[in-house]
Image (cartoon, rainbow, N blue to C red):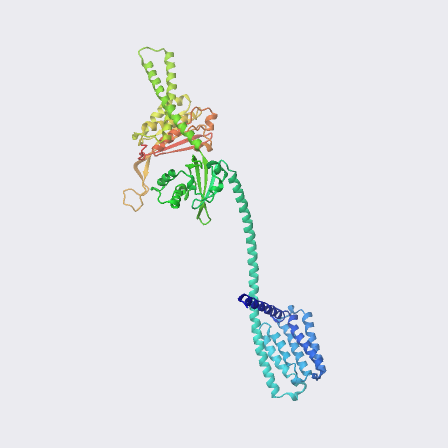
Length: 621
């Protein structure tokens, strides 16, 4: 027989043996009930009665046999009718003791000491031994010896040393059998208790597993629904190219917007193409060198992974950043896209890939470039004739021919408007220089309080005409700066404050020096304590506050944008083109300073300019 056949045969025999043992344990084991434990003796006694019918000559005392039968029949009746669970545990010993009494009567009625039914004594002994504790072992041993001595009660002359020896041997055997049965039963009881505990624990764990499985199934259903919803959202986004990659940059998601933008079919890209293949290679190499300070090394996949770092490196440890990149379409065309890269992470923090959202801004960037070119061109073309107009106006006003008052008034109107137009053209030219990165300042030591006083004095007539009170709180402050540009900053701030303040309001101009604070530790060798204020100037702070109409909170951050005008300015018909604060911010940034804007709608606006003692060294200085 082959190995598997032998294994099956052994398994079948063990299964049959297990079933047989389980059936026996049902009537004799520790978990058997009171009635079930009496059935083995009843069955054997009935077999004995059948033997007496076949061999009636064995019966010597019929009354004793009938008494044994009656006692035996009474045992299952008592086992079935008496509520043993309500009685003490030792009460159950009565039934096997009655069975031992039935054996004694049966021996008495079938030959006494020579009875063939002496072996029946071991069945109730085993029943007693299966009880908890050693009580059953003692009772079974004593009762077995008593059964041997029982025939001597009727015939005392039969009592001799042989009977005593027989009783001793039977008692010893009964005691041994009882001890073995008791220990086996106790072990089986302990094992069954352990199995019950394990079964209860198994049921508890199964309940937990079922509950967890239900939660997992519910969560999986939610995730599946969210995933389907996300896929539908991604697929419906046709104006943006949404591309998801794994950690190595292999494209995993390529939506319809990406297909429309780049011309590739989804099936030709997903799982086959790296994100870097969609970029302009030269731009990737240049950006990598800018980000890491060295050109990328390697070839093939190694080079592609390094170039991927140029795209995703700024987003690894920070919030997603939007930058312009050049994408190459399937037909070789080039697009300028605004790229937002977000890192995908697992709960443990490991990176699983990246999500890229690309928006085509080619037309927008071209329009911005054309606008900058137009602003620069118009500024240059207008500046020259306006300068000439102002020159000839000065000649007319200072010429040898006398002018009438009316003519002089007309010329002043022309000059005022020409100078206004020249300022506007200068502002446009300045913004074009800032956008082109050609804006520069000419820094020199400046007494800033003189510059502020000069600008405030120039704004005096305008404040008087607008019926606005112009106050100053100016302290001496000396910095290194471009005096012309700083004067332009003060003019813009004060001019804006006057324009946005209704009659009866107040504009306050404050200038104070900023001194350095020592940050040396307390244990350092120094003549000044830690945190002491130094006499060394650290810059200056200019504050222009008004009690004007204010600006909506959601528009404060946009005030420094070119050509932006707040809703309050448009509603109150305040003149301007929206270049003053953008120019102011550009000048302040070039000096290494900062511009802060705080405003409360209907109460006024405060603009704070902080300038360092000297601008940072840069090509723009």
